Length: 378
Image (cartoon, rainbow, N blue to C red; front, top):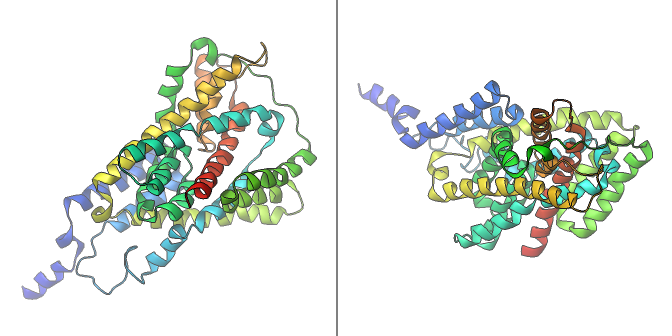
């Protein structure tokens, strides 16, 4: 009996708490949402599984070195890619190699919608300070409004590493819940007539324009916000690899093998960092509430700015306000949501190509916002 008792004391069952069970349920929810509704499955499945790994109690396993937060463990070494901000630039490289900037090049005024959709970042920064968070913590929390997980990792790794797990999980979760969060806001802020606005088809973009864009984009954004270079430098490099047509192998590696490998390691280690003992706090709840508010405000900012633009645009050149919601950088989910909402009002009104312009502009905008905050606060 003594041997059996000792064996039981070294199992996870003996050390499990209601908090561990709650987090395991959260991990199962992530996996279910990813498989059942296909909400960002490439992210939610690894994160959800990582949460399961991180919430199997290791009490009684001292010296085994397995947990993310245990000094010298394998999982901690992998987690360093998050803590040191290594993974985000690699993901941006892959995103750049997958992205077609043609819709934005053909209608450059839509970049303003991507900028307007970053409103939630700065308003949430103010809200977080009001709730008692410090300057650096508030800035890291505000970036959730950009709906860009890699940017959230990048900024919080420099400004608030102690909050990086909560902030990043919140950012990825809201990215996945775009089809649930955005439609009510879109319907509330637009009329039936506005949702039926038809936009001119995007013009054809030449290969020269596609090659020049990442070079000009790098120089312009780099000089505006040098702190954004690790992200936007890799984004525009990946796009140049794709559009130059002479580095097809490199572009293919970046958008397939590289980004897939990084996404798996990032997702699992990020989920494993959400241990009940460190994750289930009142501060975490505040961050999730602030993050939801940031995301809603950013969505509203893009829509309302599109409506303001229409006041100055001639008839026939007006913008469908729905595409303003795509200004948050959840690529391509928010663009698909804008398209579906347009189809609901007019089945023949296809907005996907128009929505992709503010969508990719939002990727640039959120990284710029992170660079501006780094330059201002550090």
